[in-house]
Image (tube, rainbow, N blue to C red; front, side, top):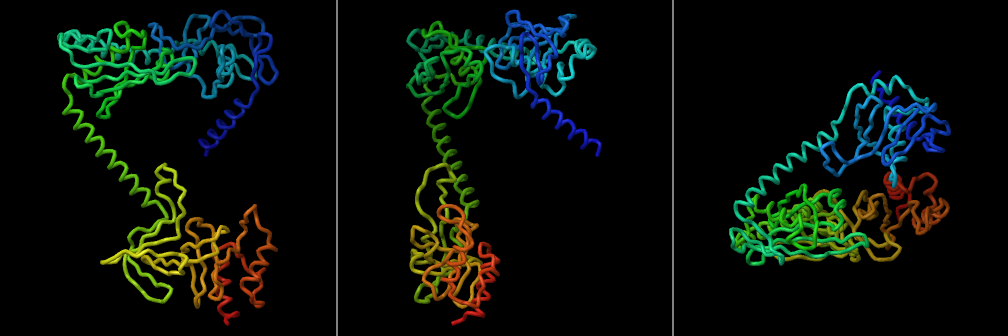
Length: 473
């Protein structure tokens, strides 16, 4: 119980912190209009002082490690008056700003345990905070970068041993023999940067791998560079960026080729390998598509090849397997489809396939479920197959599987089914309107509309039961 109370208290405290109004006015950090500290800028560093002007610590937001490595993430770096450095993850709701003042202020006041709370500065807390150094964020980034550097050194050594070179027109050679090509293509622009790609081809000019990148180096650092091969593998490119339109001076092009070579893509004649890979990819894609289609069918409202029978309008019964679609499988797979569903079913028997039309008033059963073709379920006209929920002397309560919340009453002496729920063409139907439709359709004074909830299945089943007893003609 205590744990639950602590969690609830923490949750409300967090909500309270994020609801505070924080701003900087005349060099003072204010929370809900109350000044709690001073902030002064010097380049990208900000000095935080108490209201008397005593400096407490400096703050900045950086993405550079102590080893001068520039990385894709940023963090809050705080330096105490004693020189101790602490690194903190940025809070999730850090605002975008062209300067650091606003995000630094937010992180100091809106974290789960803020150094600058609304109650004011606690100097003892700040001094305690800077007793121990914590550079775990930049250290973790440096460890990853050193690992990437070692990978690159290994690739460089292998390339040097095999004399891997790229000339000015994109011809790749190994040991003085041509083994393939690398081609750069501009794929687009947004006014600030160009979007480009490198495609590596074997000696037969068959594509082996491709990498997409930007002419803006910071965009590449932020999004990451990934080399994708013809056989579906991906290799991150680290510590390399696009540096020149001239291939012989570009940093990225040789790293791409070296990465491929080190991972077994040695170019030359790779025709047989690519053909096998393309075939395997095609088969895998087909299998994936088939699996997705099977899953979509299994999760749909549709009925596929279920043993059953049909009773046509002449009363003739025929056995076979029933298939009917009430919704689009294509839409479930992300493909547009405007076809209408629910108006046609098929009966597969040993010698032929028959098409069953809802407009013909056909009744069929698939397994334990039965359906009836009826008109009156759409303001646009037409007929569909509805599932039979209840039946009595040729009258029915029906469910439209396309819209499972909609139920209909179909009386034996009426050519169409009727909807007695609240949904209307332009909003909710009034009770008076529904009563009028009910009275005209049922045409039985013994049935009092006010006694039935006609928008529910149970209500319509009761109408049918009472109609069968009190209004039988």
